[in-house]
Length: 479
Image (cartoon, rainbow, N blue to C red; front, side, top):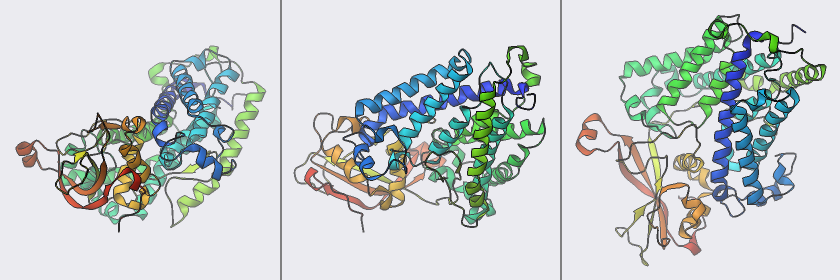
């Protein structure tokens, strides 16, 4: 079946599979280290309570049959172990069926986590990892040539990620059409990185060039993925370079890396790596051909919803149209904020809280807090609490379900919750009161940085949550 495989893409497949396994490893590790405070049996949004109200058909997950923190930890660490094995090449050392089973186990375990993760797992890169991970099941291993159909489906994923993001920008915030969005983006993005301050202070003409280049990369280059080589490889290379630029400028969890991985599968490495080891490839077994063709047909049928969404004037971002997250729609930053607000959480041990009392600030690992602290690099690791704190500052409605339980756990000195933070100002005993205040943040200028050593300047706006004791920690939206 010469039509079925394309041996020349053997190295592109290998690089893609290793990169995808690395992303899976990061995702499972983050789940294992953070779940107890977020969705554990005693977490802010407990899984047992969720599965009692949401039927299996709406959110298929192994945890519908049974849940315990120990079982969740076992699943997360098992996924990390399988991902590490695949990253080390285990998939090429076993028969084809066994390699497919390993990739299927990763997909099933992570689907089970995402579908009970609720708000904490509502990000587009969760669905993207599941969609790409599903296709990886059918990509084969070193015993067979790369199947052409799956290679094309991976390009289809990259096309939808980039083209969907480009369309939603052009239909959304006028600053994208005026080429001015990057005057603000580096400062107001969810979680700045250590270089974001410097990106923000690039000359405005360069920001305009960045915007224009972004439009070309997202609206023109993805189409070239479906052209003959070497044009397709050049297009994939441009997408990879753009994603690496985003890696440098911010912390977007593994979004950039899960876009880079399938883009690399479109690169023809023949000139670099020499001819494929065709002698090592065996004819594709009939059962494998049937499975690949069936998966391809399924993806094509399910693609009707994302295509309709891209063509719609009311295009939405990051939507799954099926509970298995097989084919989704993507997009990012249809609107860019002009200002940055941050929720600062503080506690006090005083029995009678005073406005000017001894309030001590909790330090988060990634989100801006202390103005003198340079933002740190965490991506591709995902700090879920820090990301949700950015949304909480945009609108209290985003925090309705979890902010009250978060405050309760600070007042109770919950160890799992405190492990999500960078600094606990009450190491010996929990505070008596906790409050939250909303600040306006902006990057300092070069002159301010030299004079104060501060990367941020912040101004108090208003109270976000009044001083609250443990018995009063029920959350209600501020007026």
